Image 1: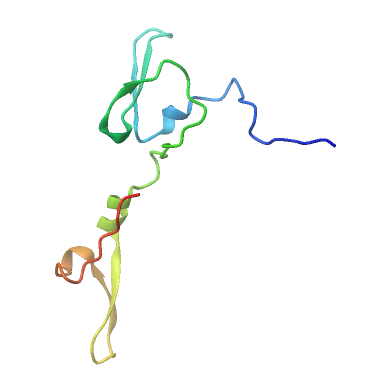
Image 2: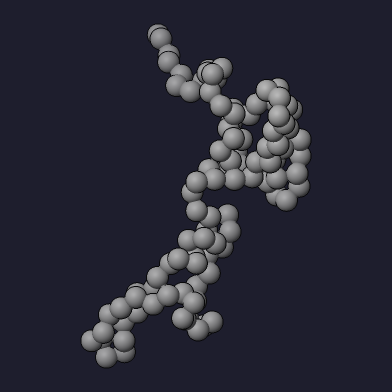
Length: 104
């Protein structure tokens, strides 16, 4: 029986996972080999001395955070008479009308 594992072997030409992570702290020098990598997840910066290929706390920096999505979210409101339907910015809602998502 032959078993094929996908993603099991690291490709050596791939860039480190930290280069696109929201939590990464990457400092590069003027020379080719001058690079310092760190991780700021959980607000405790730690030095990472090797290129990371897998991480359980990885968050792609191009994707918006929950807080960013809450800022741009619109809420659909139906009036009590049921005639008007519209969108309302979250900033226009009262404190009782707001629902805040919990962090993961």
